[in-house]
Length: 275
Image (cartoon, rainbow, N blue to C red; front, side, top):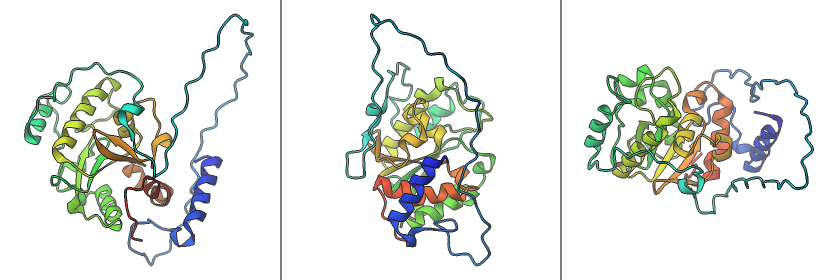
């Protein structure tokens, strides 16, 4: 977190009032043990300053105007749709358009070339839930027991419970549905997006919550950043959508939890904070 982001964060804290400033995980029960000091500043890699040459451009050469930046809406504005955020046409064939059920979708996923021979994490939860939780890719512990039994799952369960959304009203899934030791290729993004659209079609959640930069870019495009979209009221596949920090990173970084709770969640306007 740079100085400007830190200033914005502290200003947002002041606007919310001192009652909203948490000194521990915002959505956990009060703890009696001493809380160690946690720095909310992120380590910023310093880069050497490169002296650039200024080129003289002939007056006969027309300058190309810069692309306008995306205007960030407030919670009262209409959500930005995926089509509004999309910048490049997608020409990859949709292998999942003809699927007629969630079970058929996962059978098709298991036999798709990018997943052949790999164990697939199947989305879990009921149809028509309040929230569709979407993370980037599973960890080995996600394949044993239920998602609520993992450290990340327990944290998310507490988070949504604090928003009056019990785990029974949450559907849990991953953008890339198998173990991986590398970031999935951008060539797979359209296929992964087609799968997500179909899964949303069958599940029909009220809200899609995308956790983390990787999953966010796979959904909305690799040219976007989490800082651009986090907390904005968005829309994907006719579903209200919000992007938050990575749940895996929040597990070990209290500053990200606080920013998510105090800034991003109120900003989207999708949830009623009961705390």
